[in-house]
Image (tube, rainbow over all chains, first blue to last red; front, side):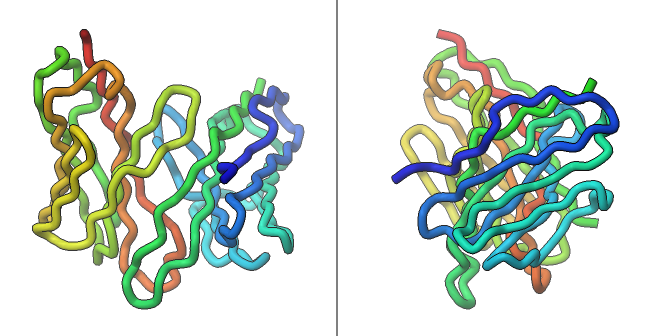
Length: 118
Length: 113
């Protein structure tokens, strides 16, 4: 079974540009979450999508947005890039939790997209 | 405020030298505590989920335990291939939380042969 696929693997952009990152979840997984990982802040939650709907979002500015398609693939977009946006962006997919048990929320991560903003 | 703290930040062990990593958490309500392993250039890989105080899980040389305030990842007789960054993450019981995990900053483990 193929894992979570993220493209591109590396990106170099300049301040003010915008960028779109792509994520293909594991087949059958309908929940896709995005996280930002930096050396100083660790992993921070960006947002989560299920059935094309954003169900939760973290404390990031509106420059960070995302969407999910009917095939569960997801994209995230960052507009007006800033130097501080340089990070590893990780996508994770999961099955929906079993009712009342909290199970099945374990995340399956892709290898990430390393974004460098110059 | 929900918070997850891991210690130590880095740990160097000789092969065979057992030790423990700590993850302390302050959350309004715990739904689950998760341990992940992250190798350089890769995304985190799931290891364990713990749901209630007193619960323990084992996998090869790793054993995770949970109390009401912290979790430990015990590594018994580690090998160089256990070198990685170990992350803990908490999922709170807040409604509509949908996969909003709070991650610790990780412990970077280096096992020397």
